[in-house]
Structure formats: structure tokens, C-alpha cells
Image (cartoon, rainbow, N blue to C red; front, side, top):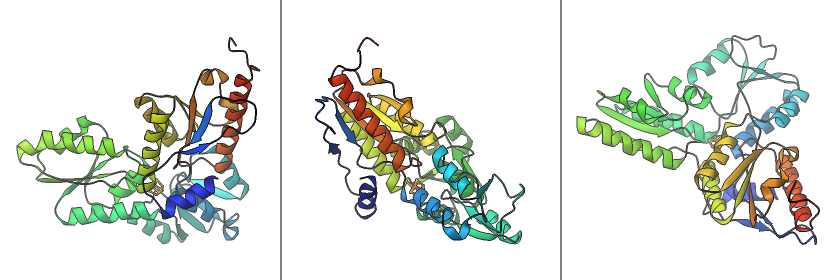
Length: 322
Ligand code: SF4
């Protein structure tokens, strides 16, 4: 089911809709379980994982940085003999080095080649697009400010391609832009559009009275926007949201935070064992979403376990006082 949804997302990124799944058995389960129309692995992360798992790279590839924040996927990569290095200065024993979907700067690419490795570039085309837009803005005389997380690999790659750039994570960071003549804002691809717009509005209020020219291009990627729109829809129609994602996945944590900010109770779980039956008591409709690094099998397993809990509670098999 997830594969069908992901294929549809690639050809039809339009207005997300909720896919409602009927109760899976005749158990009399009263809680409806629904999946977000867009969730889980984006095509950029999925293509990078598929590339690393190609047979030609078995035992002869090192990934520079984290390909994905998910323990199960990392175990699959380990079993395939894929190594990891956080920098080129670490000992690398394979002939090929992979750049992840988050991308990197041209300087790092040149260094990979200069050290004699074959460069395998899995940079997502939507990240490449942000690099192009940022370089164009710099050529047009703007100081580029990236709205995103300081130190994130995508942001480091982006700023590394520019002669000078700022990273804006909180409104306090805008103070550092005082005195610039022209400032152009772009977004880390996984930012929320709301946060990007709010930051640009705050920059206008702070800097335009001093004569600073402000420009902006919202470079959040379409899969991220689709997931956020689907989560908003889910939060409107559900009284509980379960986010399937690894504890190390920043993106999964953010999905749970966003759902809570939208006023719905939300929990992040990695596996069915993390589910607490008490969360589901008296719930009318439970929505499921997942981070961009969550494998389909994990989503399926958690959904199955939620249906079992719902069925047991509807049938009175779970003591509500437990
Ligand atoms: S989150 Fe967006 S930009 Fe990043 S890899 Fe996925 S599709 Fe590409």
C-alpha cells in the first residue's frame, strides 16, 4: 500500500487526501485507523538507499555522513558491507565514496576525487536545485541566509558552496544580518513553510526600516510540503497521531511536535513494542504518519499492532483500568 502511495506522490503531488482504511477484522473495533496520504521515505532518501544496496557496491562503498537515521536500514547497509565515515580524514578502505541525499559542497566533491576515490553522488535533485538558486542569488549581489538547522549536513553543504553565508535558526540570529545591503533567504529543504515565512516576515520588520533589501525563495521541497499538508489534514480529523520513526530521526520528532502544536495528542514510536495501549483508550480515530527514513515494513508492523490494540479494547480484552 505504501509503495502505491509513494508512486502516486511522484506523479501527482497535488492536494493530499486522507486514505481511510477500514477496521481489519470483525472484532468490533470502534477506533478508525487512517494513514496520512504522504508519509515515510521521500524519493531522495529512498533512491540513495537503493543505490548503496546495489550489488556492484557490496563491500566496496563508504558513505560520507548518515545516509538515513533508522537502525533497521543501517543494519541492512551493514549486512551489505557498506562502511560509514563522518569525514574524509577518517580511515576509508573502499574505492568508492558516496555523498548522501543531503548533498555536499563542490569543494568536498573535488576532495573525494583528489584523494583517488570514485565519487558516487546520491545528492537529491531537489537539494541540488537549492544550491543553484543560492549561487544565483549570490551572483546577483545578495548575502544568502539559510533558514534551517545550524550544523546540519545539508546546510553545511549549501553554505560551503557560497563565498559567505548565514544560517538563521531563531529570530535572534537575524540581528547578525544588520548592516547588509541585500539579504536573500532560502530554506533548508525540510523546513516548514510556516516557519520560513515567519522568519522572512520577522527579517522584513527588523531590517527593512534600516534600508536592507530583502528577497526570499521558499526552497522547502515538495515531498516535505506534502507530508506537512498531510499531517495537518490528519490532525484535523484524528484525536491521536502515531509517528513511526527511529529515536535518532529529527524529522520524526518534528512531525510529532507539529501534530501536538496543531492540538492533537501525538507519540513517536520505533516499533510495535513502543506502543502503550493506554494512549488508545476512548479514541475515535488514530492517524499514522512516518518520518522520511522509516522503512515501509516498520509502518506496516506498527499499524498492525495498533489494530490489534483497538480490536482488543473494543472487545474488552484489555482492562481499561490497567
Ligand atoms: S527531504 Fe526533500 S530534498 Fe531532502 S532528500 Fe527528501 S525529497 Fe530530497
